[in-house]
Length: 185
Image (cartoon, rainbow, N blue to C red; front, side, top):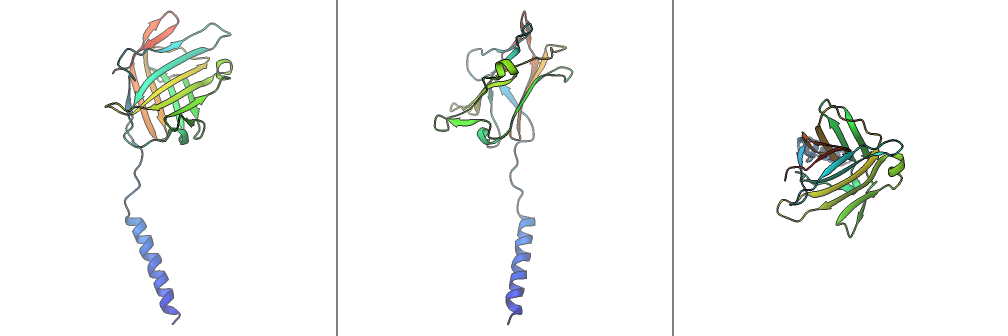
């Protein structure tokens, strides 16, 4: 009598193992980077400013991202980088999952580091869900550091939330103190 329950247990485990192998793979985050666009109807300039030492250079970004998979900015890694036409990094920053916090009853995700103004790094990141026709999220970034000047005005803006990448590559307009660009609407 003891062999029947053992056979049932073995059969159940074999069935469970087979079901696991045949089950559809869990959905993964998007693999193809999605574009970064302008977050509002009016021009919204993004800037890189170079400062004389001892002041730090700065970057200010206003963008819209539309992920093709679900994201959770407060609980996923966040990466941001600006690179020139040769792939040289101008500024790069990374926040591990849990660095940002939900505020306003989950209507926005915020990161703030006041020390970045003097030590460098991300000063602020604000991610807000959009409810208009396109949807997605508005992302506002401010950062400071000793930036590497680009070799050309062709600059790639890259950000990722978890495994969801977003990018924009275009010619930025040279200015007396750095560069500026308005992402495509």
